[in-house]
Length: 113
Length: 115
Image (cartoon, rainbow over all chains, first blue to last red; front, side, top):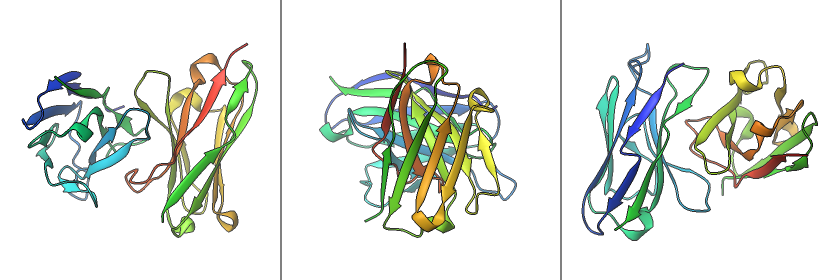
C-alpha cells in the first residue's frame, strides 16, 4: 500500500499570511496514462470533508484562488497565499493512483494563532 | 443540486450487523463509481470500499474484507454498505462519496460498536 505522510501535522497561522503543507508518498503517484492522482481535502470542524484540489493542481469549482497545489512524483505541496478565518480545519492529501486501497495522509490541523 | 444522504447508522454490539444506505440525487448516479470512506472518532480519513457503475467490480480495504459488502441499486439511486461481524474498531462516521476523486460527500452517518 502507498503510505502518505504530511508535514507539519499542526500549523498555527496568522490571518493574512501564507501557509504551506507538504505531502509525500512512498512511491511515485504518476499513473500509466501520465496523470497524477493526488487530491487535497479540507475538513472544517464538524463538517464533511470537501475536495479542494485534484490531480495535483486543479482547483475544484468554488475553491478560492488563494489555494494552489503543486508537486510531482512523490512530493506535493498545498499553499494558501493569504490565510482567512474560514480556512481553519484539517487538510488531508490522498492518492488514487495505486489502488486498492486509496490512501490518505494523517492530516494537518490548521489553526489561527 | 448534487446530494448524498447517508442513513442507517446506530449503536450495535460487537459481532452484530448494520446496513448503511446512501441516497443520491441531482446527478446521474448510474454512470459513476461510488465510495464509502470512514473516520474513527478523533482520527483521520480511511477509504473503505469502491463499487463500479454496474456493481460488477468491488474493492475493499483489507480490514473489512470478508465482513463488509458494498452494493448499489441504480433504479433507486442508492448505495449500500452491509456490515457484518462488527468490531469496536469499526466505530466511525461513515461517508458515501462519488468516486470521481471523492469530489462530493454526504454528511455521514455514525456507527458505534459497543457492548
